[in-house]
Length: 373
Image 1 (cartoon, rainbow, N blue to C red):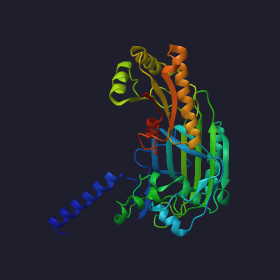
Image 2 (cartoon, rainbow, N blue to C red; image 1 turned 90 degrees about the horizontal axis):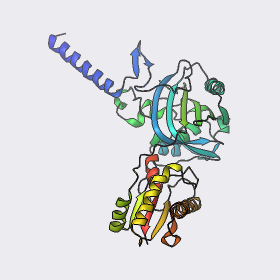
Image 3 (cartoon, rainbow, N blue to C red; image 1 turned 180 degrees about the horizontal axis):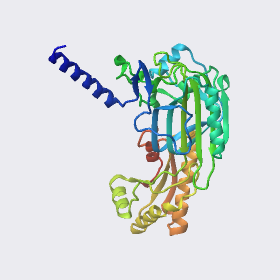
Image 4 (cartoon, rainbow, N blue to C red; image 1 turned 90 degrees about the vertical axis):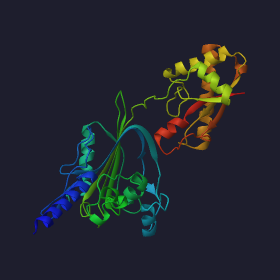
């Protein structure tokens, strides 16, 4: 080989290595076989060990998010056509839960590949035993067709929807390396079988912890890294309270904004989920409302409650009304504001200021507004 050809070949090899490094080195080729390593930046949850020999191919951590915990099987049917259209985002979610609970807090999601010689049931039972050792109590457990009418559907058609799939592990096939829908982590649960699922809860004085564990045998033939191997989807939520990042608006700002626009949104008035009792940390915000009203004795306002879209329409309308009434009551009893200057009203989920698809958006939609009468 000429020096020029050798130099060119080395240059191309270095360029290819650079591309693979930028994607995150997950699969290392040795003796013609792909040897998996944990996805870059991933780690086990500190509370729950991994199954021996497992490798992380997908990982996500959020300081605050939500998780739907299944307390019963899912219902609905699908065909190959619906399954393929769903994968491409062209068909709505074909399965719905029969019983569930939504929890919020610090959220961790990990996707593992376990050793091929192990069964999905063995892997699930090991997680169950580990959770019991750590004082978790089972909330729901199912296997195969108990979970969904078609075995394997619970994972890829409900628990792991296309819009929320992990992309940590790209496809090692060169022609598909840049196609996110063909990444190993994206397709890991597709067309799986021999599924098992459990949810569990641990109660402590500081926070409740909810865990969802799903195991299934990989059924996506184009990816030998996961095909016919046990896949584990582990999701953990620790119900720590959301940090209050909203700034309390002072009385002067309220007066200016109400004079200019006729209303102002306030985020410093807080309630527990589905509750109407005002939390103690809301006192500063309500004190500022009282200052504004006392500074301008002619001001007459509506106290308007807003919610996100979690829950039914009637529930949210009633909830926002009662929360507004709680604020009115506090202004009257604690600050001596006349009842004739205040009126509680409810808009519920009808006037969002941000998308309800994320917790950040829902937090902005949960608010109290002062509206000039």
